Image (tube, rainbow, N blue to C red; front, side, top):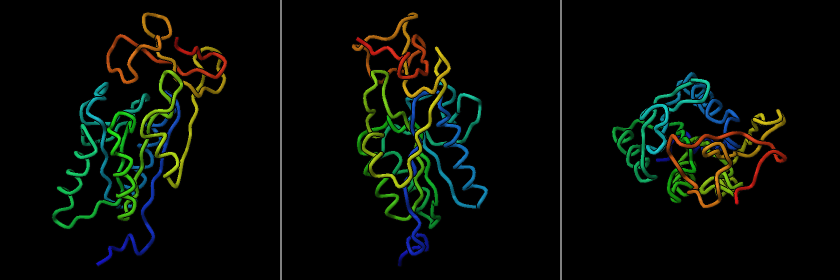
Length: 200
């Protein structure tokens, strides 16, 4: 039997992307809460590698927070969804935070979930600190029904920023640095096209 959501043409992907400090997570949380207010069943996931503020909550830089399930892979997400829905309780909306930190199978999973009638809302950085496309986000860009690219304010000049500058020991990180780095030794700045310094 087809569920009511497929019959009602529900099921799509929303991608929120942009550089750091653009308000992606804040917008992500706002959208998920909006669905909660409408009495839809909402479940959120975050990569367990991102434990900067909390192991189980999604935090925006301005302090907004949302309860979530920490996961290591797309397989973990699917397993948790199956576990929640095993008693016949359908999840209406699935949120996935920091898409770029998950494995490459996550794009296929978001497609599968949307095909099943779920609203899938994801966020992630569009470019890494080298100004190159970030994994998963680049592929999902062409699959999502709705894409919002947010900008920040340049840390240097105050113009619209679309790039993320990684700073290590007070200087732009070198190109040899790993793309994904979770440590306290670096910091990030939003930069415009003209203030961004390409790593060498």
